[in-house]
Length: 463
Image (cartoon, rainbow, N blue to C red):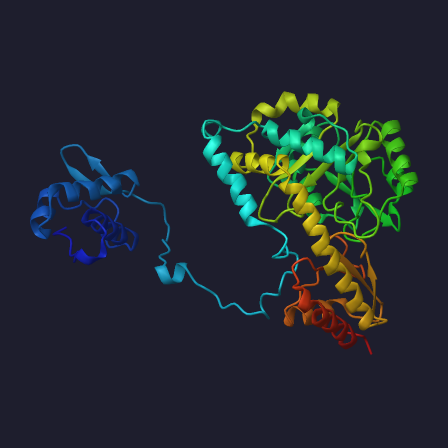
C-alpha cells in the first residue's frame, strides 16, 4: 500500500491521531483494506501526512487494542482476518432521530404528582444537610438492607399511621417494589414454585415472579377482596393482596375476611404479601389499619412505597419481613448490594425525623381530597349509563366499569386521540373496566376531561 489520503480537520477539535484511527478503521470496515494487508510504516505515514511519529503510533496502537490490526515483530502492522461479516455504518443523524411529539401520539398521563403537592425547597434542604454534615458517611457503600436511620423512621411511621409492628432490623429498602419482589422470589425459590395473585391486580408484580420461574395463580377479586375459597383451593402458599385499596377495583377487605386470610396463612404455614401502596390517601373516614399489625406480622410480608406519597421519581420502596424470613435473608444478603442512593436515603430519614414528611402527608390529603371531590362532582354533572364509577373513596385513580354495549377498545383509542389515557388491566383482557388516574389533572381541567370521557363512551356505544 502506498499510503493514506486523509485531510485533517483542524477546526473540529478532534486530535489528529483519532482522526487517523477513524480513517483507517473505516477503510478496514468498508473492505478497502483487506485481510493480511500490510499498513504503511510509521515513518512513511509521518512523512506523507506531515505529522509526528507519536500521532501515527497512537492511532496504530488503538487499532491494535480494538483488534483491527496486529503488530508483527520486525515486520510491521497487518489487517487482521475477520469472519464473514458486513459492518453497519450509521451517521450521527441516522443514529439520533428526534421524533415529532404531539398530544395525539402521546396521551397525557395524569398519574403524575400534582404540581402543588411536593415542596422541593424542603427536599433540597434535606439533601443539602446530608451533603454538608454526613460527608464521612457518604464515602462508604450503603447498608444492604438500607440506612438504619431511614429504617428507624419507616418503622416508627408504619406503627403510628398503619398500626404495623416491626423493628428496623426487619425492614429492607429497595429501588421500587419490583426490586423487592425479586428478593422475595429469591427467598422462596426452591421451596415454593407458585404464587397467587389478585385477579385483576398488579400485573407488573406478577411478571417479576414469572420471570423468576414461578407459576402465577390468578385468584378472582370479590366486592370485599380476594376470593378465599378459590385461594384455599389453589394450594398455593404465597399470595399477593392489596387489602386496604385493591388495585384496580378499589375494594377494601373487611376485618372478618382479613382474619380469615390470616388464619389461612397460619394454618397452611403460608405467607401473605400485603401491598399498602396508597392506603394513606383515604378521603372518607380513616385509613384502614394494615393487615401486618393484626398478628405481629408473623405471616405477612408488608411492602410500601414513597412513589405515591412523595413523587414517582423518588424510587424508594421498602418491605417488612417476618422474623423467620429475616433469618433466610441474612443468609443470602451477602450476594446483594443496596439499590437506592445513600444520599436520598439519609435525606428522606432527615425529612421524616424533622416533621416535613408529616406536613407533606397533610398537604397531599387536602389537595387530593379536593381533586377527588371535584372529580366526583364532574361525573355527577355528566350522568351516563355507559359506565359505573368504582373505587372513588381513596387513592389516586378511579375505575370505570363499562356496560356491555360499549366497545372498550374504541373508548381507549378515542380517548388517546384526545390526549387522555385510559388503561386496561394487562392480565385481564376480557374485563369491562378501565383505570383512570387523575392525580396530575389540574383542578380546572377536571370538568372538561370528564365531559370528554362521557362523550367518548357515547360515541363508542354499539348500535
